[in-house]
Length: 158
Length: 102
Image 1 (cartoon, rainbow over the protein chains, first blue to last red):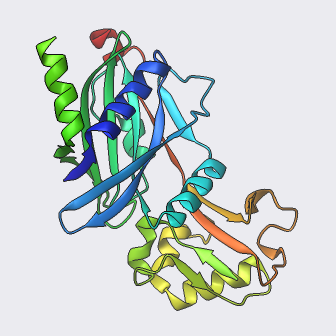
Image 2: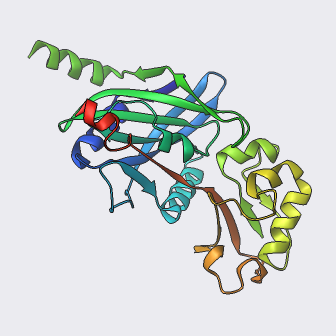
């Protein structure tokens, strides 16, 4: 199970809306615990695939190293990544699978329809390496803080 | 020198984030690493012994693939090697699902 705060959940979805019609991408920092990956914070990353940013993403290794250093400074680990699928399903694609190498990490995908974030799904990369890796559907638990609950109620009442 | 191990490979270093080695070159340092943790080798190198295409190794801030001496580059005590698998992906192929979901 992937756990993240309501604020981080909304932030990664908002990132996909901002970059639409291009794909956004970022890193999930947190801790892997007995029941899954717990996200403590997310870090936005740049998409270096400017040649076809509408259907590809790549995070520069240099940026990833900086994020890894940041994580270490916070006492956290890289526990996953997120990206968006503009106008396409929140399901992993063949490219996503071929390019997935962080076993044990969560890969979060948000479908963004005409600029509006729709479904967000998470997939856990399991296995021991390239030969037996696979994506498994991963439940997402969104932790609502009191202020987030209040904001949501206000929005629902508006 | 220190070698930073990424999350997915820590399963093969006993959970260690950082492994200390004393090689005089990048190649020697990596040899020490894989000597101490043999299971790592198959995750870093192909069967032919080449660094896997999705595995990036940086000496401080430099990709070792682009260093003039590559793995023969000499290292200092305070240097850091970082192993960082690539992260990339993308949407469904244009013309296939895109035509349906647009």
